[in-house]
Figure (cartoon, rainbow, N blue to C red):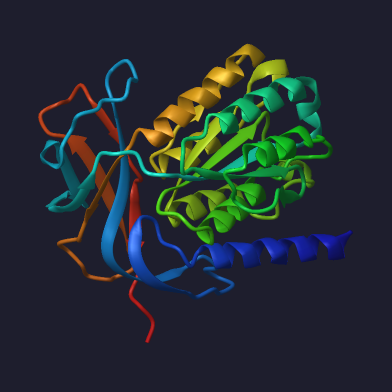
Length: 315
């Protein structure tokens, strides 16, 4: 048993190290330096910062028709000049990560229906992959636009065992990193918390997963289903998604699942794309805070990732 856990821990750490060769929203060259004290340190030379920005009104509705002149971008409080802007929808590379732990059995049919409806509504040009997790993580083939194959992977879901939510999140982000595509999305569905506290869940921690989200170019969304007395880790899911400009939803009824998937699908497609070259380009390894707002419109909310690390490149 101890040997098995050692193998799992090192496998997860290896996947995390591979993942962290990417840095959030940058066109960059990177090299990972992994140590026992700081296993997730990234060395990065930043050239430009790419952002996906979702803008909504006070009722949560997407706001269209904005131009580059409508946006204000600040890095560590310093205004930045937008060098690229696009308002049209771009194809997505989506990984749908479904909780396959034992607690899912009660609502399994509803979850399958909602997930299948989600992939059936993919836009032209989108590709997706289905992942499932309990105390292990499995991915269904490669990214594809074959909706029949994606639906078959969903219908094969057979819940069993405890929940390794943190490990699954890191492994899914790693899989997305090596996928093709300019816009990448991770959608996590779970009805519970990680079983780590009971000794049966993840080898990596919640902090490791959140750091992974900060260091990748994927936007993370989550649906935490609270039905059937579930104890969903709202704090973790909110932090994980907010770091990347995504959203976390917490439906309480099985009848709300399809609507939750549809709401997230609309949000992930309705984003403006913009980029800027940092004015303060010193590569000192510090975290750079990013803030995006709509000029003169306090009634509008602009969501994007919280920032990125600007590590120096190794010689």
